[in-house]
Image 1 (cartoon, rainbow, N blue to C red):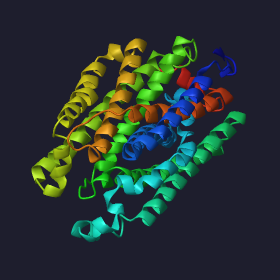
Image 2: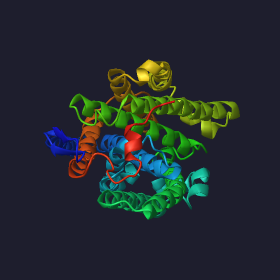
Image 3: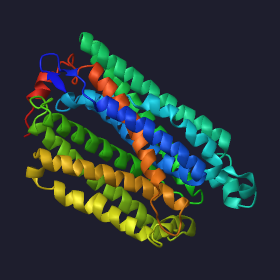
Length: 394
């Protein structure tokens, strides 16, 4: 890969796109074979991988909208990378289609005979039914795609020539978009994850999923920046001052995720209502107890103390390490939410879990890389670009 420091563009793309395409094709083919071998495992593995990658893309959308809404300067140099990540959302909408044939495999509430014998599911049938489930999914993706396309096109128009009106449009889109984002992310998390065990409910589940997804997005941005720097790309533009802020945000959202996770657990434990406690009990039985403890220490305790020192937040090698670690823990978190519905007695990794996350990950990075190699790596028309490049933490 070669980088032009005057145009902020990659002049040679390298083999990254080809590798991503190969992983996408091979991973998805193997995952499709998994459907023939074990259809139930296929749908649960696919849903886990799908939510993992979609949550990161949605994190990119939120980060971009928040950047515009608050008028941040330090993050201008990261904005295009975040936009390229959110640009994956329209393609991810297509990859939601394989989930639909698996509704009866994955969601118990989709079976009329089960609902007929369950008074609680009968009370929820007005919301939990297949037709309304699909309609809601279409609405979620329509909102996310409209926001993504609008913000991306406006960003490219700004590259061609800055006009003050663009800043106002960005702010309006950010303000309206974050409200719509909060609603759609909350209800999509209810639909696609919480309803896997339809007797269970948690009013803060959407915030829990949001915190994990945004933390994973920050980790992804960090990993991408650190890998770019190893090739001399953006090394004079994204500086240790920006690393420091990425590190601070990862630390903050590690705490926020831990707070949401503990709050959810504590309120369920304190309330001691059977419909609520059963969800936690499933994740404290057999070998699932190990995964629960891995999340406590791996998703919170270790990143908390690792990111605490200032020196770590300004160290490329350390940030690359913790970025990869947080991404792994985010996948474990999604796995811990989804898979116990299929395997209640204990976890057992399937090869389909691996092929699904590789296949969809290949699609994710192929789209990301196409955007990255097509446009400048930073928003060259942003009036605060120079201030962002020379940003200093105080």
